[in-house]
Image 1 (spheres, rainbow, N blue to C red):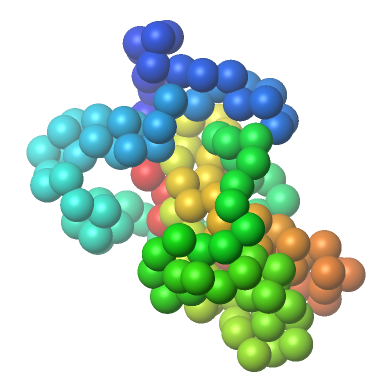
Image 2 (cartoon, rainbow, N blue to C red; image 1 turned 45 degrees about the horizontal axis):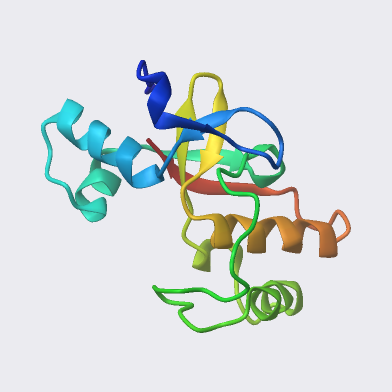
Length: 138
């Protein structure tokens, strides 16, 4: 569990209240340094545990996001399109990579677009999916 003692590095997250580091990258870099690892996300993922998280409980560090994925497997795809693919079975929940940060007792998204798509799918599925997803928590 990571706690930031430097209040200047926190900013108010307007969506649901609370505070989160100015940029998730700052939090990750501090974790890398604390763990004595390298500064690559892939290395962090190797040592971060996979845990079950309900996407409805995840907080967002930003009040808005772009409507398309910027990189990774879904780069260039519209978020609503991917959510629809989840709904019609073209894509599966496990196809959406998610990573979270535990800050004190709250879970925060480190990849907002993926978490948003899963949240959208949760609403569209009308109870057919529980909202539980396996993700890395740092």
